[in-house]
Structures are given as C-alpha cells and as structure tokens.
Length: 270
Image 1 (cartoon, rainbow, N blue to C red):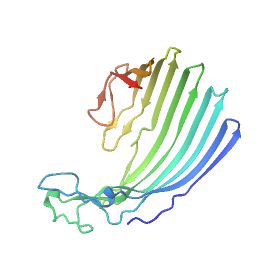
Image 2: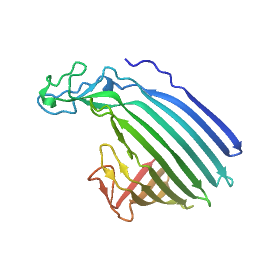
Image 3: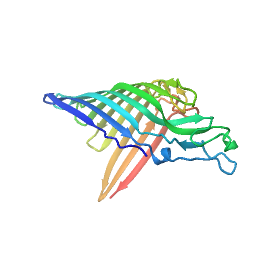
Image 4: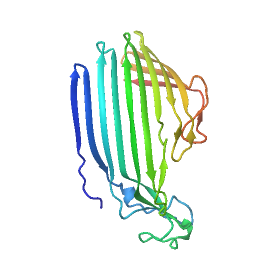
C-alpha cells in the first residue's frame, strides 16, 4: 500500500505593466502506482508467450516530481502581437519502470517457470530524470482575419535507468525527446467564409526509447476550408495536404516513412 503524500504548489503572479505579466511557480507532486503496476502478475500460459513476465514489486512507491517554472506574457500594439514564454526545470525521482531479474526475488524463482527463459521483469522505482528547457509562442495579427503563430520548444533530458538487477550503475540516456521543435502557422479568412492555412514544422534528431534514432526532418502542410449555411444546416468542408514537398521523412521507428498525403473532410451540423 502506497503511503499518503501531500503535493504542495506555490505560484506568484506580478503585473509589471499593463498587458505584461511575470509568473514564478514551484511544485512537488506524486504519482501513486497504478493497479496494473502494483498488482501485475503477467505469467506465461499454456506454453505460449503472452507478454513480458511482468510482476509488481512489493516495495513499489510513488513517483516524485519537483518542478520550477518562470514565465512571461506580454501583449503589444493593442493586441496585434503577443509573446508567451516559459522556462522550466523538472526533477523526477523514483519513476516506475520494469527491471529484469534472473535470480530469486520476492518469492519468484527462475526454476518456477522454465518457459520464462529464466527471467522476470518487476515494476520498481528504478528511473530518474531531469528535464530543463523553455517554450515560446508568438502570435501576430498584422491585418484583420490574418494570424501568424510561431512556436518553439527546447527540452534537454538527462535520464538514468537501472535495467537489470545487477546493473547498479544504471544507464544514462539522452535525446529521448526532440531537443528542438519549431512550427509556424499562417491563417487567413476571407469574408466569403473561405479559410486558407499553411504550416511549417521542424524536429531535430531524436533517440526514441522503443523506437529508432530519427534524423531531423521538416514538413510543410497547406489546407483550405469553407463553412456553408443551407437553411438550418451547417456544412464544414476541409481539404488538407500534408508534406506538400513530398520529401520522405521518418517518425518514431523503422518503417514509419511518410510522403505527401491529402485528406478531405466534410461535416454536417444541424
């Protein structure tokens, strides 16, 4: 049974000038093990592999996350330009993951189930990580019915995980999330109800856990939409083309290659 925890959070907002605000916050939060993690007893059945041999560790405890944030929001030129910026640091201790055992542990023994290949995976608090970075969104509305949205996120991850019972030094991993992700979206709406949009997206090298080493890539999308009113009916039409340059790129793991694709959607409301 996980012990009771208190999760405090403090936040200070300071308006340095009209339409300009600073915010600082700190928090400590806990995540108790789920039933699937704490009470899991996945076994091999009928001589067939069903899943990993997964068992909940008797000493499984809550994950602990400490977070610090500093943020700024500012609006300029009567709302035609706004900046929303945030810097953050997260420190996770005792994150829950599975660890491999090949010797007797908490009542389990390799001799009990030969089909398990002499190993079992116990959910335990065997992982720590630190994430630092910032994100920013800039919104510009230079003319009526036109908007430009710029977003950028920078995340730096330093993770440690003990994967085997005798691997006390653990393993350090980096680049498990994209360090830089940038997107730009331009939209323009005509008085006739037509809306045009174009977006550019860029992501740098990523070493996904459970996936592959993915090189950086960029993608450009365009869309056109129209809203129609016929008596009491509302019809929404949208045509979207993704990766208009038709440059092949990969997402997450081997085999997930993408080229140009187009989608048409129609919705009827009444």
